[in-house]
Length: 434
Image (cartoon, rainbow, N blue to C red; front, side):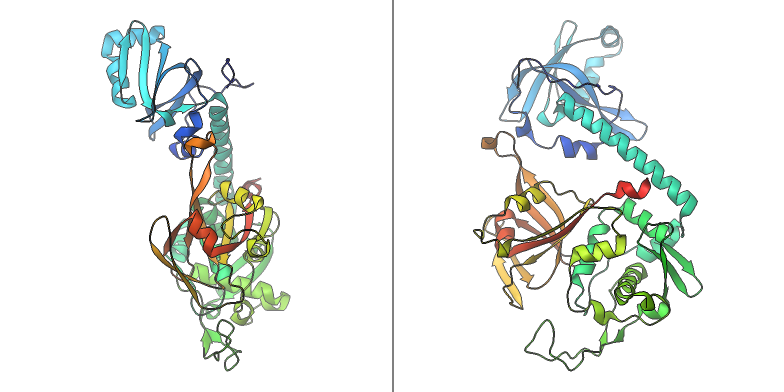
């Protein structure tokens, strides 16, 4: 860091409130501040009571006076304002600061606080946070306006259709179910997509595709479409177990609330083409033998809100099995839950069955299915002391679409050993609200 504090062209208003969830994205590691030296002027994020509870408010002009590396705290100081001097004398201002910010040292006309390092941010971080909140507020206001003017079902109807867990049954559509699980990780935008796209009608439901498009193509899904359908491949070699015969009499819909069965039926009809978009029965055999998650998301959402498509097959890259390509690691480092819809699968080398192993970091045992897509639910990071604050992937959290409650948390070492393929799309949900 240079001798002068970093500045930006447009300083945010110190009264702008930044939500804790947003702060976790921008101020989430202590080692990020190793470059700060004593005397640097920084911003302190102070907790105040707002209309909706405690919030963190950026206050500029604090000077770093000491580091406590053991407890990961920093001491900062600034001069009191005239109002603060008056408040201090009148009603114990410093005591209030002590309660909120974990400690204080009283000096004439100065405040000196000892706070966790996560309460410190640079000017640029605060600027980005405030801008991010303004963008989020704009999206929220547009979403509210769209739902007010164009919603095809009420919130109660949405809850009735989608309020509950869901999972894959005996159809080989894990790539589709894992995509739906990823979409639900952003509940507000998922609600908007569904309420703008599905209209209850006498026959069942009228679904507009691509989802979220106000004037898209209409597909009718009847209640009959949500029931099991005939398996045309019965008696043939089983797709998932070639040495066995497919004995399934029927192909079962996704298990769970009707809303997810509706989306599954819509995808089946989209794959069948125009003729399948009428009142014909659903044929789940078209989604039964595997597929690509990015194709499923593009088919359902269209290109309008797809910012980027990504397919990585590290098993074909010739790299060391415990290393990820630069592109693959960059994707994990920038993974954003809700924005990134991603699935991952093993390097099966044509194998079927299961992969059993013990995570060398957590010592937990796991069983992973070959030729099966898992949802990448989140990525956890750490900031090693020897990397100058550069974050590294620590854990990758997955969900198994075949088990609605199973959360799989793998160290990066275990993840790279078991999984070698990523199939993903980055969503630009803001395009929906333009």
